[in-house]
Length: 258
Length: 257
Ligand SMILES: Nc1ncnc2c1ncn2[C@@H]1O[C@H](COP(=O)(O)OP(=O)(O)OP(=O)(O)O)[C@@H](O)[C@H]1O
Ligand SMILES: [Mg+2]
Image (tube, rainbow over all chains, first blue to last red; front, side, top):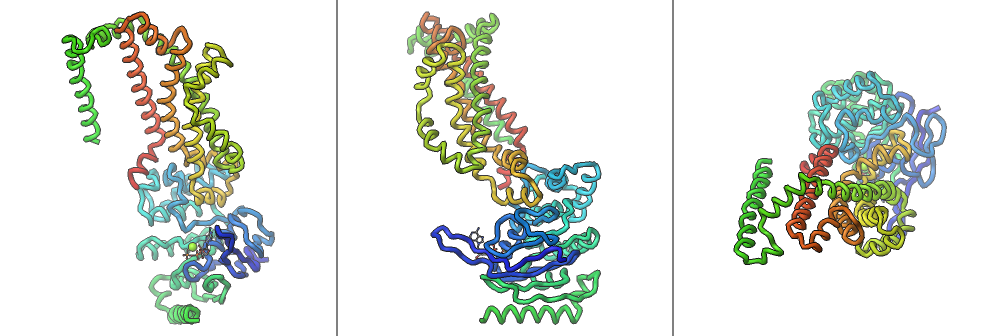
């Protein structure tokens, strides 16, 4: 049994005029327990839409999503989405610590240990000393890290991340990639990760699902058999890394021409 | 911040500077001093009435009525506004009723309320509650409607139930606007308590001012007005204090953006 299954999922949005746009054509793929899978596709191809369907926040038009073999009809427990609009998803009236504790509070699991864990995660994403700050006192990249720490503190079985490193500088980005990998291994979370950045997808993932433009389909699944733990310098310089990257670029630009 | 406290001091200076002008206008009889007694006489009357306990008593009576009506409006309208904001069917059902009732100038309600409640406190409380209701109701509704969809989604992805979302997300997110409504209603409250006391009452500051005028105790009338002004000012300051303490995050947020 797969941990997460997306079966022939499609989604069209009803427009104000009454017509509808097909955002997702028909997508099927599976994610195994403990896997790190990335979705890569052009802007506007429906990646956010897909994650929202998987998170049970909007209904699919057809097809289904299964978690642990059971079809979902609402937000599944043990699955959390980190939103692309991270700045709009933070609670402005809660401090950084209050935000990170949110998920545990909802579950009724506030305790001394929960707080220690939250503080630990805040430190890991590089925000130590900002526990008492409010989100609006932080830069965009820092806010994004709060959103990540909040999702991790909840301890979900599956973590969906929608371009979570979209607005951090290149150096921080590399650091956060490594932090995420470390936490993924430590917490044995399963991660479905959306990104524009092909190299980031290769560096992080066990597998990449390449999506076409709208209405999107899975063009190809690509296994990444690079050894772990990965290293920003040696992994990225690896011959296989470079080949994978060129291969994927070629595939995407072929599509763009067609 | 510095500029702010400086301009406040300037405001006080202006007020103090106006006192001799008032005094002069009255003493030189440029304005009939019978209707416009010198400030010193008003202040003396104010002082005497304060230590005799007359003014504090009237103010207290009025405040009790005013706050009863105000709190009644808040207790009904905040939950109702939240329900209307969350369930559009409820809003659509009530929309016409609200849009018809809202434009009625509140003083017009007084005779109606007198029919139902007579001249007692109930009448005044009803009139105040009716008038204070609209700003609270509509601001709460608006505030709830404009809660970011992403925030609601965030709640749901962390397993928050719909009911819990009201207390954990909707209410805090809408609170700045709810407070705006409450502040507007605070001013309305003071107006309506005075009006209702002028129409039918034997105590309260509204009655006191009107009664002093009828007996031609003009100093007293002005002293009553002064006590109202001070009360209004104090209420507003108190409200701001409360606002700033529970909405410190919002103050910073609006300053940051
Ligand atoms: N709420 C909505 N109503 C109508 N159409 C929508 C809505 N959300 C998205 N769309 C449409 O669906 C398509 C896919 O949007 P989506 O946000 O899922 O793309 P994306 O792959 O996440 O893009 P990006 O990489 O830029 O974030 C777009 O064409 C968009 O116009
Ligand atoms: Mg997106």
